[in-house]
Each structure stands twice: as C-alpha cells, then as structure tokens.
Amino acid sequence: MSDRTSVLAAPARLGRPFAWPHLRLPSLQWRRAVTPLAIVAVWQAGASFGFIPARTVASPLAVVEAARDLIVSGSLPHHLGVSLLRVVAGLAIAIGAGTALALAAGLSRLGEDLIDSTLQMARTLPFLALVPLFILWFGIGETPKVALVALGAMFPIYLNLFAGIRGVDPKLVEAASTLGLSRAQLIRHVVLPAALPHFLVGLRYAIGIAWLSLVVGEQINADSGIGYLMMDARDFLRTDIIMVGLAVYALLGLLSDQAVRALERVTLAWRPAAKVGK
Image 1 (cartoon, rainbow, N blue to C red):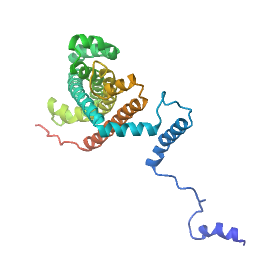
Image 2 (cartoon, helix red, strand yellow; image 1 turned 30 degrees about the vertical axis):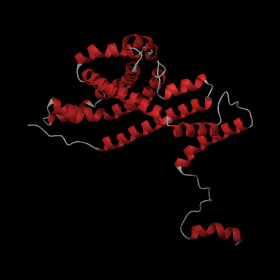
Image 3 (tube, helix red, strand yellow; image 1 turned 60 degrees about the vertical axis):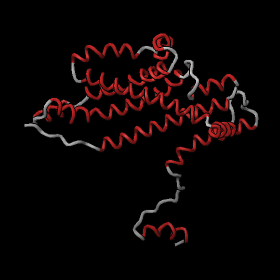
Image 4 (cartoon, rainbow, N blue to C red; image 1 turned 180 degrees about the vertical axis):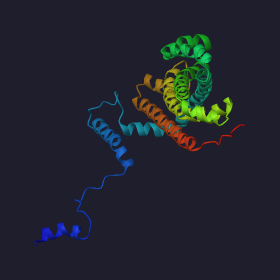
C-alpha cells in the first residue's frame, strides 16, 4: 500500500469518515462587517485618487475628522440631544394614541366601524405633505416637529396591533373562556399577550418612520437638531458634516432597532399567570 493510500485509509480504520480539510470561515459578526468595510475602503480609495470630488462626497477620513471636531466643540452632542428629545416625545404620543385606537377598533366591532376606515384613509395621505398645515395649526416652534413624528409613527403601531388582536386564534379564546376567565381577564391574559409580537413589529417600523419624519420636521424653522446641522452645512457646502449627520441618523436607527429587539426577547419570554375565575 502506498503512502497516499495509507493516509486516506487511516481515518476509516479509526472509525471516522474521511473529510477533506476546509478553510475556517470568519465569525458571523465579522462576516456582516465585510461588505460595509469594503464599501468604505472603495469610497476612501476613490476620494484619495480624485475619482470622487470632495465637493460631491467627502472622504471617510474627512467625515471622521468632522465628527471629531463637532464632538470636541460640543455641537454634535447638543444637536443630538435636541433630536432625541423630539423623537422620544413624538414616539410617546404615537404609542399612546396608536395603542388606544388599536384596542378600541380591535376589541369591538363598533370601534372598528368608527375608527378603522378613517385611519385607513388618513394613513394613505403623504403625511410629509402636511407640513404647511402643521405650520398653520401649530406655528413654527417645537409642536409641529413633535406632531409630525407622532403622526408618522402612529400608523405602524395601530395597524400591527390591530392585526395582532384580530389574528388571535379563536380556539385559544374559546379554551380560555371555558376555564372561566372574564372578558377583562381574557383580554389581559390571552388577547394582549398574543398580539404583543405584532405590537413590537409595529414599534420597530414606527421608530424608523419617526427618524424619517424628524429629518423633515427639523427643517421647519429649526435652530437646533441633527437636521438643522445638516441644513446649515448644506449652505456652506460642507459635505463632511452632512455625511456625519447621515451617519448619526443611521446609527441611531440601528441602536433603536436593537433596543426594541432586546425588549422583544425580554417581554416574549415573560408570561404572567392568569387567575381563573369561578
């Protein structure tokens, strides 16, 4: 028997099937970072060799330097804090209004008849085109900015929670009713927990729309916020600061989505115990 034959046959004699050696793939986290890093590398190379003019798009190094200067001067933290307050206030209103309307329409046929058709028509309106009306109604202060965020974020919450309530398995409701649960207990311990995943999906969509709405809202006579920072940079052709603002929006959107996903893991793992009535 030749040396090659003995090498191939050795694993079989040991009771293990032979497997050809293969390359070790990088971890999942690193694989996900390959494409963004490659894009940044190509972007920097194009800027360095003059294929991408700085007036059109600043290079990644210029963006990093601009971000550092904005952080050191305190400008970026200030504008970021203002934008966060606007988004939090708008989301709070959207969650409250969207949840209340979804519960009223989802738990009652009368509520559905009174609410759903109106909201279905309202959600098809381009809410960004309502900016002139918001200025007439609320002025040019903080109210129209927060109202624009609230309006845009309310519809995903309403639609998903309404679908979750109406999508509860009737057999599950019937089984819970036979155990003696009252209507309030049925809603609390069966309907709402079953609709919770839909609500969290709606919340993820709502957060994305909230940031989109904020970009437009901060163009309404704003003197602070990330959107204002970008509009001011546009007047001076500072594409590096504009790219910093875009990067901040993208990072905030990613962090917000990750926070909701973490909340989803916690809430869906917890189930309150129902008390069965007599």
